Structures are given as structure tokens and as C-alpha cells.
Length: 69
Image (cartoon, rainbow, N blue to C red):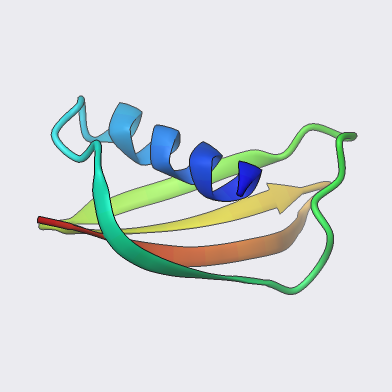
């Protein structure tokens, strides 16, 4: 849940507040995302859909999609 909330906040920031409340989404994790080293959330919005991924120590640990109304 912490990763999904971090992704939601990253998308809200990147979209300048246009995409704030997702209606649904999905996420897959290929590795654990640990407390250290710091993870980076990368996100991009395409209309009412946003994609995100978490990168930690040069490795993508999780990624997904959020849908908005």
C-alpha cells in the first residue's frame, strides 16, 4: 500500500494536480523495495491513464498503471 500511495502522489505532482484520485489500477513487484537506498518513483501520464515504476539502486523493483476518471 505504501508503494501505491507513493505512486499516486508522484502522478499527482507530475500532472500538476490534474490526476489526484485514481479509480483503479494494478501493480506488479519483481523485487522488494527496501527502506534503503532511497527508491525513485518515475511516472508519466497519458490522458486519464498514468504509468509508474520504482527504481532502487539501478534496479526496477515495481511498476504499474493507475486509471483516472
